[in-house]
Image: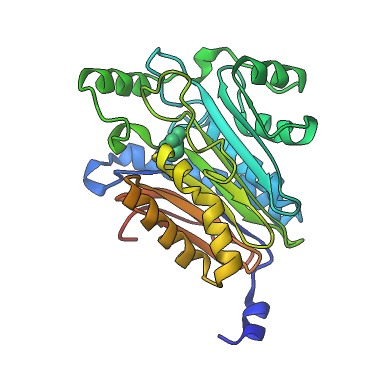
Length: 315
Ligand code: ASP
């Protein structure tokens, strides 16, 4: 398509979300689970698109969409987060503003209802990018974020998964037991992009393990000169590849489309041994996703297109 035509067709705003990648196949799904996941993703798309349609910022849209998913027990973020080996829910999140590359992140939270809002507060109210553990809790209390009892996050299904993990001594990256991380990327009508990711991490994680989700450049990255990315998958490999930044850099420097860059970087990550997925959007209005697992919970909407939600590989 000629460039001029592309520019005219460009949507004013875009929003892409994910609810984790993993073994998501029709024969393993119950109708109840399918309906609950679909409803959760639709509600998040609505929360984010309401912000964008009213002229709000990509940062506000990303935060609004992720807050909905953090409250939804179908996903491994906030309420419904996976359990650590010691039977706790330890939450990680990050957010990045593509207009100025400001970023904030938190790791190992246990009482903050919306880790994505804590990550944003780190960005706006502290000189730091990443806070962890008790210090991050203290900061969140000071920032007047909503604090809940740790039991708020716990669900019977995630406890069952921890027990299964322990009894079968499953592999750390067994995709059956672990994924469900959430993320959002958006382009607003001012032409700015943003990205955010929130997770409980891996079932059975120990020793204060932190994955890619709160690591800027690995699980999350946003730059108006390239694109905005949120990832989900086997975090250690995503950190080693620097997945989110690598996709952004390829888009900036090689002229690849968002989809081409995402496919290449996830391919390289798979060669290292890590599977997962990403969502991407950019100032061009392109929306893309890519995954190397059998499925990824995902959805998208734009000023020009109706909301769509997909789960499986063949959609
Ligand atoms: N990437 C997350 C982590 O490693 C897990 C996930 O995406 O489900 O903590």
